[in-house]
Length: 239
Length: 118
Image (cartoon, each protein chain N blue to C red):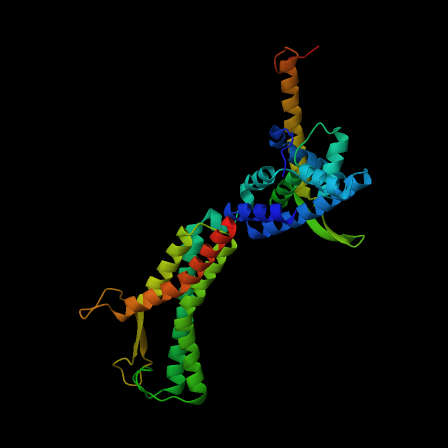
């Protein structure tokens, strides 16, 4: 019975049924099948006949699929509002990671480089200060990749069509790749300094800008594992 | 899976009613519910037994029933029981069903709804 349940699982996930409901449904069907099999054996059937009778009583693949898909309340948010899950939510998470990185940058600047006009450039910071700034850099540069891989994992887990996940990955790559940060002291002596954030994706006069390359790198490295997974999935289905 | 005879129109709200009615008496797990329906209706209601679970999940999501895991004879089963909201829903569904069957019965016996049928 494992094979039909695997097919049922794929169908339900593709239809947008929430994974937790799919998991529980399959577990309950498995239990139910065991009960039916035992009942048929008690009724005098051989083991093989009992299995066949139990499968018939449990319902056809179409019946079991349609019964679950028909319950619209059991659909996942990725199926109900893919634009929110793959569009808005990743942007929100990206904004949070950027805020965290900027906070580390600004506090590190105040604590470890109180005399410097900017935390960037050829300034030597060692020990704890260096670790602190590296943490900020890791969050700033690593955040988009982890968010992208998260999108891919979610899409793969729910066997979704590629369109929304790819749109989400492109969006994250564009925003993350094109954003830049500047930090400088204000004109007021002893001022706290300020951090300026902006977006710039357009090619520069001398050719393709760094930001565009950055965006392409993020997109490629996040979309590639997803595409490989889809390719593998398609080939395992056709095999 | 092989094809089998079933009556798909059964699914229009009736499973909810039957399940809530059974669970209103005692908590049960899926297999028990199906077997109880089967024995009480003399197997007149025939659907794939597995289709009971989506209805149970939806009822639970609506707050009409609640579930809990219970280990019986070394096997872990999910038992369902009606909540107060489910009891109210059962009352509503029962009333709707009673009105519906009365109306259909009236048509079948050639009268008009609301008239006394001899």
